[in-house]
Image (cartoon, rainbow, N blue to C red; front, side):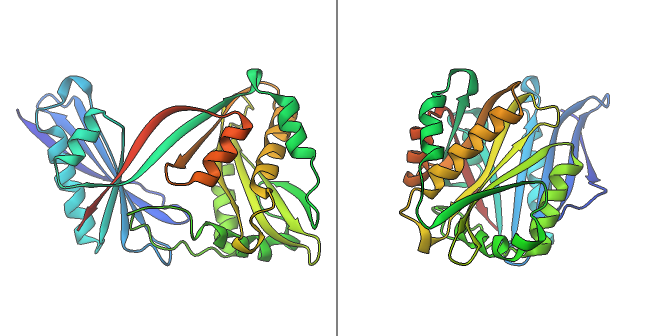
Length: 293
């Protein structure tokens, strides 16, 4: 088939990455598929790129996806990237496509959802109200308050040992500038970022956090971002405490919010246990693939 691949560039770089793109079109100019290549730019991840590739269902198995992949791989190599990541639904055509083209499976993910209307709110409230001696909860919307910014940035190292199995994800280096930029990016696209944090009462420092992003109109699905506790403060039920409190807060502030969604590595047993205790129900599985460049 006659096929034209047109390179595009996202005109606006993000706080921690920039994107390249390609559009596949037929002889008549009709779009057949697209590819987006995210190039990470922050310290610790300059070796990494992430691919999103889509082909119209009626155009599959005609070479469109292969041509788009070739363009993205060539660009990633030209940018000096070492690893290319891509995600696919488990047992989907994309799963088979990536496996057949040299990508290797490095991480299994389970997506889960809590339907707020049917949740056991009494049990969630009991978890949220239970005292945790030596700790207190605090919360904020959007950008972290100045007085907590430094310790919150430091608490992000709680994600450093998050199970990533064979993924060459690098080490994300968080500082105040980066956490502020991330919060501003959420606000810029019209969503609401709410953070629930655990504070060590002995020194007032943030030792754990749970982030939730809600659509700007307060409807539809909210999405949990990171939930983590510093290693030296684990074993006190802080993750379950923060996430339960975040659920109650979301329900109170956004009565029309339907569901809360989360995704967890299959090997992250502690966080899966937290989700199970709060009533999250698995909905689908995905596979993270990596191509070594």
